[in-house]
Length: 366
Ligand code: KG4
Ligand code: ZN
Image 1 (cartoon, protein in one colour):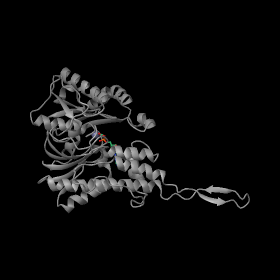
Image 2 (cartoon, helix red, strand yellow):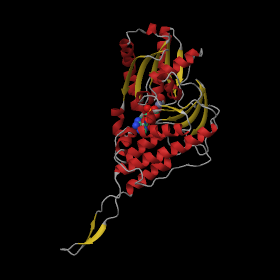
Image 3 (tube, protein in one colour):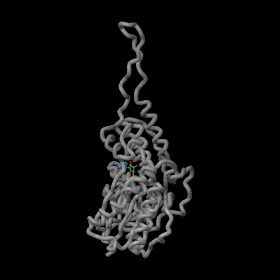
Image 4 (cartoon, protein in one colour):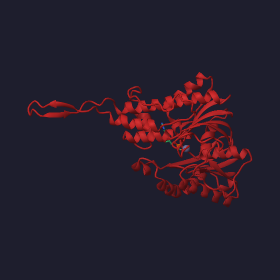
């Protein structure tokens, strides 16, 4: 049974994993760079690329050692070849090429988004194509009809910010740590989702797409308006008029909860619309880093049951960036007889559906 070594280095996680075709993850290591990027409130590409270069080889060695294997026992090497921060992608891809050349094993240049898109099938052997996938990560927000490995039809994408990006930027505005998604989710538990009125961009629109930039800006305005203007009181001794600060109109937790609820309302509205045009599907599936969010999962699960559909969400560790999903995408492609040449060029942009029309108003991330 085939065993694939997977390598992931497209953003701020350096990861290696060994996965067998029966879906067993034999070993895996993930080195997060959160601490290195935290002072900047976001991922710094140059710092990320250097960290990948320093950590990747020892991580691969540790993964092989944990599984009690040598490179010669592996059937193929799969690495993220894009889309992502190009310096990091090149570190992973060049390493994979060197290992493939040295061991004379096939190379699989994996689209990182395909890793996310197929990750639910690694966790759940009963998940059959086709399924409707909501792919929500730090760089993407898309609805995809997944018809098979390598066969994707994009039904919607964001025309501006990705959802994870909106979580991260809103968290920064609230002075929360990086990464912002988990911090907002935690704080939202203490807040009232109705306390702050925030927009739901493109909700009920005939356009299939998402938009989150306006929501993020509304969080900024809500934060600025949180403190009511000071009340001017006449000092009883001095007789002077002095400003006295009032109580905040709402808490940061209220802003976080209201932001999360607005994002969920948009996701559900757009996903409901996509279910109406996707044709028959076996399941509603969510993947990508933002899929770790429990409130988002619960809302999607309710939507699926409204449509008598199965809902599938991979375990949280498979949602955020990892190498097991890259190895698994490699296994799926290997089973179709596919592999890639050693001169495969890393791609900073790489849409899953090359035929998708550009979204009207979309920026570079579409
Ligand atoms: O898929 P991923 O690990 O990396 C990319 O390929 O982008 O996604 C990272 C994103 C970050 O924006 C992070 O804030 C977000 O996923 N995220 C979350 C949660 N956990 C991670 N967003 C909302 N709620 C969470 N619990
Ligand atoms: Zn990702």
